[in-house]
Length: 544
Image 1 (spheres, one colour):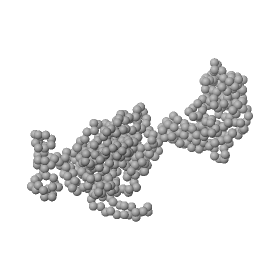
Image 2 (spheres, helix red, strand yellow; image 1 turned 30 degrees about the vertical axis):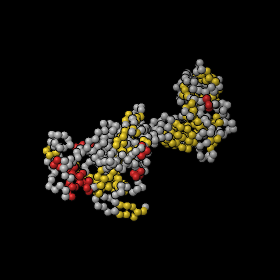
Image 3 (cartoon, helix red, strand yellow; image 1 turned 90 degrees about the vertical axis):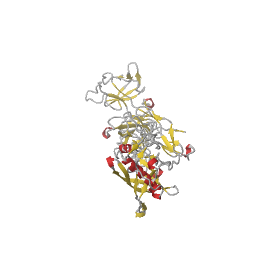
Image 4 (cartoon, rainbow, N blue to C red; image 1 turned 180 degrees about the horizontal axis):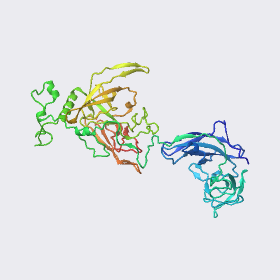
């Protein structure tokens, strides 16, 4: 027998591994290789699979798996650590089936593995019974390698844990003594008893791949669960301002009781019964603003009288009233700055995909949250758009609409850069969506914020944010629905929680609901035709 024989590829230059791809579950990598053909008639071909975290150690670490099915040229390798990078290689090998039966090798998933063990005690160069520590993993017959010597054995003796009827110095090698520590009388080498890996060809091709999570699989670990970003480190935290100004807020239904704290409305009763719009029209001339609030005919109870008015409250109240005359109702959709990372945001490419259908280029699952204003039946906020030049600019790609209005609104709700507004035509149809470019907030007395000015840019209708589903009008009786309890069990999973959905009276069946839920446990869910979509590995049902 000659060790020079080895399998052949056709053509010769296309040999070894072909593809190494992560399956996207964080733990499995699929590899493919080119087909090889036996060099000798009657021999069978197998494929030795190597991998290591170090490129130089791929082959020196030895064969990890062996694929023995002649018509299959791919396999899945599992149990990797998420985020680890490995180098993979495949070498074809061939065997004489009368000497080695590959089907008797131990199973390792879809492949096999070569058994290995250690000597129970030292042997000399004439010993024909090879004692090994773990006899059960070895086939009933085959070839083993100890140091530089190949040994053919024809049977194994379980009681003595020995491979018996051995032919020493097989395949033109030299029979030597072997000690348990790897010394053969000349040098000290690997002390392990290896099953022979066959007549193997020697290609050096290796491919790199990282075990990663790809949609719809999300990275979940015992240490940090689903890697939810819980703190916004990019934009200003205006929670304190909202609270001090009596902000209109709908807290996360998963962590609070869902109560709403609203800016006190102007009561239009008692001394304040005159609407400034009516006053400007000439109605009710002779009245004034100020004086007593919450008096006996007020809305907070008999005998509850307060003299004097909070300047910040009065400022915000009057701005809101004036905006009702000079502004226009728009839908506010807030960009997400915290929550569950979108699968397009990966460790090796820390920029989201601009046209991702999951996060719309934001980097967090669902991308945006719609703000539903509980002070208006249509759920919108009121914004004043200043006079703006509307023009078309000729670019290399064609004509581009340019429309960047200066806008103004009251201090609540807080608006941030990269939020967007949905503006409507006079007939109620959607005109364009506008992305907020920058926000200027002025302060009045006692460091209270007094208003918000910002620039907004008209967004072309081919932009991905036009695919984001928003509810345009909750008029006139908004209704809040709740989802069933959802959870992801196990360490690092998502605890039980529900989501809220705000709809209007025009919704008469679940199939008409196309929007998103509120945020709970760091995520929300899109709803398409009444079906809550799967996010973060779970879904919900809507409770009517």
